[in-house]
Amino acid sequence: MNLSRKLEFKPKFISELKDYNLKKFKEDLIAGIVVGIVALPLAIAFGIASGVTPTVGLITAIIGGFLVSALGGNSVQIGGPTGAFIVIIYNIISNYGLTGLAIATFMAGVILVLLGLFKLGTIIKFIPYPIVVGFTSGIALTIFSTQIVDLFGLQIDNVPSDFIGKWVAYFSNFDTMSFFTLLVGLITILIIAITPRVNKKLPGALIAIIIMTLAVYLLKHFCGISGIETIGDRFGTLSHDIPRPHEIGVNMNSINLLLPSAFTIAILGAIESLLSATVADGATGNKTRSNTELIGQGIANIVVPFFGGIPVTGAIARTMTNITNGGRTPVAGVIHAIVLLLIFLFLMPLINYVPMACLAGVLVVVAYNMSGWRTVRGILKNPKSDIAVLATTFLLTVIFDLTIAIEIGMLLAALLFIRRVTENTSIHVFSNQIDVADGTEVLHKEILNVADGVEIYEINGPFFFGVANKFDEMMLNMGDKPAVRILRMRHVPFIDSTGIHNLETLIQSSKREGIHVVLSGVIPSVREVLEHANIPDLIGADHICDHISKAVTLANSLVKDQNLHQISW
Image (cartoon, rainbow, N blue to C red):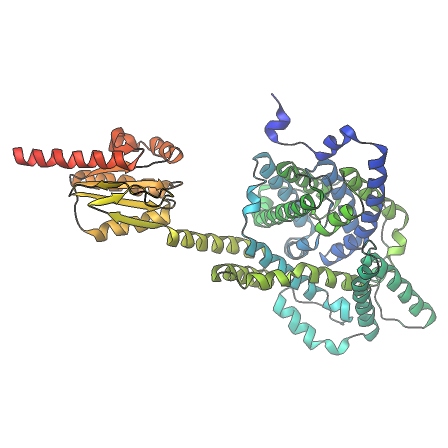
């Protein structure tokens, strides 16, 4: 038995090594070094914005990035902390502390592994696009709102955790703004915006950090300008020792308490990593092994909490940087993790001098890129149901939190989809005559004469609970009692338990009234469901026909037999 095929766990790292050569290594080496440099400021910024130290952000990028590349299902995916997790991480830390975050991240990793093992990698892609855009835009606005204090240098002791409370506090304290702090943030944003116009391969965020760190150092030591807060001012001297693994204390109470947050991390991580992988596939022409990717992401999230890390997922910007710099195998991702490790071990003291306003500027640009305002503008031209899902998810993300936003967004999307399918599913009634070719591409007509006392109900669409109730109501409103009811089901792709229940009720009530029920045009998959529900035993196997002509012939003969029986009496 091929276990790897059964579990669909085939890391691309192993596959790519089969025909690996020196030329590929040189390309991966260059790409890995560049991505490592690009990832450095982002890992630090995302760590701080999430409510942890820069060290934690780097450790997450090193360990998580290595495991995603070594065990994932995409050749060029770069893993690490991302902006999408900032909101949920910050909320978990606020409510449950770092221990709660570690447990939630571990549980999310287990959920991701299970999603991969049960081959649900492709199903994640079916989450409605307006939901993805809604919570992504909401996260972007939330990230922006969390950077106002550092961007403007506001003097606020306790910033409220809720969105509205934050902005009330900001407007109340704008008189404490620091001009030089704001200038550092604005110049950072300007450098990041201009850099791609000079050279698209240059890491704008890193260049901005280098320039502004040097500028602030000179202002402090030679111009006597103080008040521009740095990482060292806020966090003290950063350690450059690799943390030892430690216990995270998982128990049933913590599982019950943190399961919703873990589920949100897992779903968000799955969506972001698979979206990143899809974008990468479009750029490279490769095909991601979705289930392996989820398992790899899951293992990374299981491991990083033991080293104090935060959630890991695929990062679209870093993945595309890897591709544009020539990376084509997971070796580039492994090298990126090694580069970050070397920086962590030997250059950590220099990070103390990075201005907080500079990191705020980096995150403002990240938030702008995440906002997807052009996509939002396009969705506003779509049906009102899509706009409602987008707006609801966006507002819930901003005002409440991401867990509620995803849950209610999914529920709203499902309800609107059910309504749309129900509205588009039609039920037509025929009597006296029916055209067999109606609804097909056949040009000639084939008219069947239907005997008096026979009614044909054609269902066009899935026979699920919404339509089943609609059909039930229509039958009650008809009021008449024919001798035979034909249910034409040629356009019924599936039937659910409610549809089965309503069909059973119809058959039983018809039997009591002396009415025959005949099913026509049942496709094999639907017939299999009917057989499992013992419908053939209830209705009679001969009353399930594969074509309308056979069903009409049977119905006409049943009416004729019934009339002869009445005459004989």
